[in-house]
Length: 182
Ligand SMILES: Nc1ncnc2c1ncn2[C@@H]1O[C@H](COP(=O)(O)OP(=O)(O)OP(=O)(O)O)[C@@H](O)[C@H]1O
Ligand SMILES: Nc1nc2c(ncn2[C@@H]2O[C@H](COP(=O)(O)O)[C@@H](O)[C@H]2O)c(=O)[nH]1
Image (tube, rainbow, N blue to C red; front, side, top):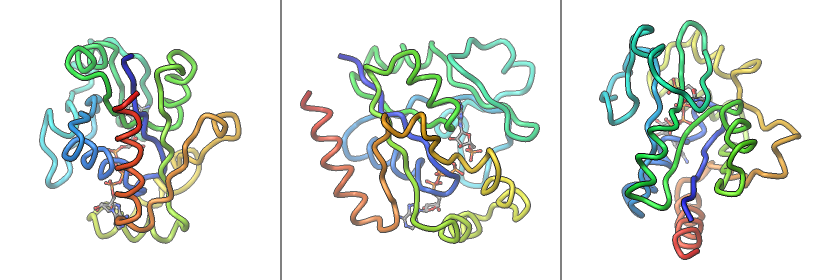
């Protein structure tokens, strides 16, 4: 059966790092999403995101889409179908609203991984080290942008506290092995 590891959690929790690890070590590719935000240092088009203008974004067909500040983000049905053509198991990074949309429609095919850290200070430190703008960090770590796990999604979530990367890797190894066997 085609399956999806849906990865959500606060900014800086390590969603991208985890998805990259699954791809590098288990050949579980990430379904790329689309965004109108500018590239960060070190990012590449069509490797990290499909970077779009507002005009090209509006022409796409989205499973779900959201807006952060003035930037849009969206995941397309086409991208998921295309990824599943070659791989039974893929990953996808979305925010909490996106996760809720997938769980509503294809819950039976989803393994929902909610990634977090023990403290908000750790998130802040990681984002500062990553070179994010301090004002954007404040926005990302407050209000609806924090991506806290809402009670209605808690029963579907597998929570991974990514404080210690060596422990996280062990948990990911177990998870990938069990999902690839099924
Ligand atoms: N267990 C960890 N310990 C320390 N640093 C980590 C750990 N996991 C990830 N990081 C680092 O934290 C930073 C944020 O990680 P990452 O970009 O994967 O987060 P994210 O959840 O995808 O964030 P965003 O939603 O903002 O894109 C990166 O610099 C990454 O190398
Ligand atoms: N609902 C969706 N959320 C998405 C999508 N692509 C990314 N995201 C989430 O946006 C924020 C910000 O990402 P960043 O790369 O600018 O740091 C983060 O929480 C992502 O998980 C999407 O297609 N749909």
